Image 1: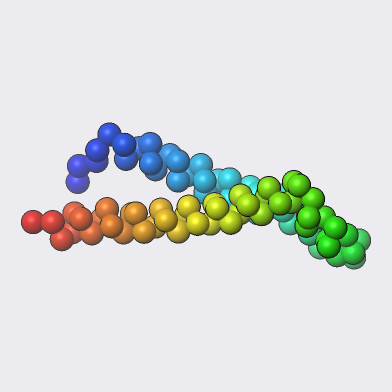
Image 2: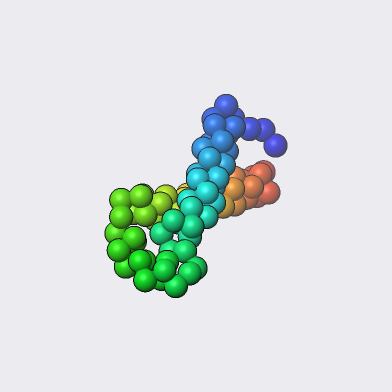
Length: 84
């Protein structure tokens, strides 16, 4: 299997998105919807706070980037499997 010059860069970008997704998910549960009675009472107000909106955006787009990465990997691998 031969990789072109942009493959390591693409893999690096996808890894960064994946790491951002994981970090944002943990920070969101800690700061925006903590699993306490007080956290549940404040959740309607906290979920609209700017840092929670930013974390939700990162979670959503990080998940999409990971899904796209799996699709790209599938296409890339199938090229080598089915290429004559």
